[in-house]
Image: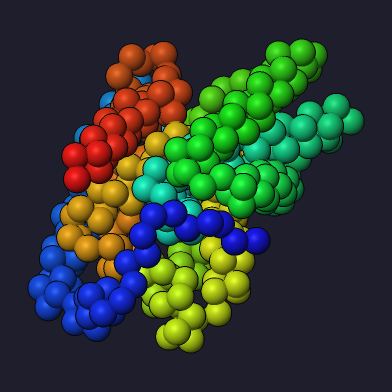
Length: 359
């Protein structure tokens, strides 16, 4: 079940000393960073409600929200039924992607591990597409919980393949290459199924298969929020054992951490988070890599207790901003959100690789 941990383990007196004597300025710095990201997130969220084909000012949006969803005016319907659920879904799923990337980077001790790179998102997308095609082919509608269940099955199956590969390869680079290949295979099969679908409602899966927050409903937002917030609470509850695990499995065991159970918890929670994203938005790239590293840099440490909330907020702001760009930059043409996240996320990965190479 476990993955082979690469490189020298940061154990010994130095590592234990750092754990035992944390930086006293760390809580203040983490709180300042969280506040700054939260303000940026609020600004992006308001912009998402204001900008679009029907322009509205922040004051008008405030009046629309205060009046409630019963107003029949066009601007009110656009805000309540289209923009608000979409912005909320982008916010919550961005946080989910970021937390999933944080867990996978900790699990594999690999700085560029995330659901998209390891093929987990593509596996979830494949199973959702297969089940959706089967259900729609019988004239029925696939429920939201069924989408999450199908995506979770795909995520766990793909994670199982990646874990088997991790047992046999020693180099981090080979593990990433193997994950990318698994993702390509799953994406190719999904594209094949979508390309040869006959029903128009199935053909429309193409937009979802490229990553998009469009079409979000209030029912979807409720499910996404319930799953993501439960998983986020679980990640925060695991902060202490995760911090010990970062210092190496021998050290984690020496302080009483059940490493096997922790691994299982990491796999289940990260798979559920990535499954939720794949079920409702399709595969969204680079958020799971970029946001955790930006959060660590902003907090100034890698301790999960402080990084977890910063990671969620950073991923939420990152996705909210990228979705705003995707739907407004070339309006009325809407870009795939993965295209925008790749533009901003890939440079973070490149900078990370260059920095590590220079050390």
